[in-house]
Image (cartoon, rainbow, N blue to C red; front, side, top):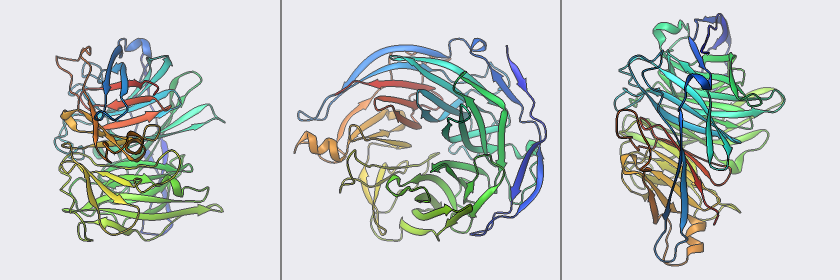
Length: 465
């Protein structure tokens, strides 16, 4: 039976977010009900369609053939289900923890940028479980009629039996009632998923408003969470914020060095119990750049942001990044299985410019690969390949260092190995199903989930090589 969870008087402490200063706590803000709608699996039958369609890709004669099988398809959150009366929802991001794949959704009538929301707000978080060999089961879904969600992260807390799911996005400022200076909708939210009983626990919902229009990305380093904000216009309204896991307050903020935040990533080789290197993709009007912040914490103190330094941008030499004139960008460190090599570097998905490479040092960027528009990338360390979302052009598989080395002299770095095409057996809502991948998750070494916007979510399995 459908459950309506009314979350009243949610205590949220709004922080004064000054550059490089510990934010002072303000008076608690009583949040209006988030209007959470919680569905049991029996309420939404047919949410996952089982598939068994295989295909292969291979790079030239020398390349290792890669074999994949579509195992499942999750249809979009549709407009026949309340509270979304005006719009189907679009799969924005995927994040896997063990055998559970979380997907966040937002309204799909947003035009070129999800931050320029021209339709009603609407967000959803769903959980799907790899329940057997190649079998996916819809487990639970929670809807948020006042929210749009864009990116997500999650952390398994074995002491509580919950997976803490964090989503970055925006909430309708006309309804939220948040009293925070310069708040125009940006929020970071958390809801816990009980992985023992496989259900969201809606009373656990917490939310923190942030200055700005929207939270555009969220990453974790040693259980410390960093949130990026922006407005999609390239103007000065963005920032980086460290938030605590209970979302009581902002621990640290830097609003002076980010104009319009697009994407975040952590250099995994730098993560220690007390520090990490954080990279930011942002833009100032048409100046697209990658910036680096070395962050550290410990002894109960909040994070110390070093001054963000320009890692590479349009004015520092090298190639000029083509404007990111689609709704999102992405960043990924391509780190091999054994050690960093000359092939390993920070990669940037820059929309109509394809993929650029920032290298491992400051000063200059370079074109890496172009297969049309690129909105999302993911590196598979087990194979040494890069998954490159080309929008409606499907998804390409590119050779990275280890794959190219193992394949021999006929295969070079960034060569196309092949391309994913959508399965022929998917039945969609109202006809054809779009295949326009926005986000990619590689998990448990051989499993892949693709958030395909209006097309829903695809689950794949790669054969052993």
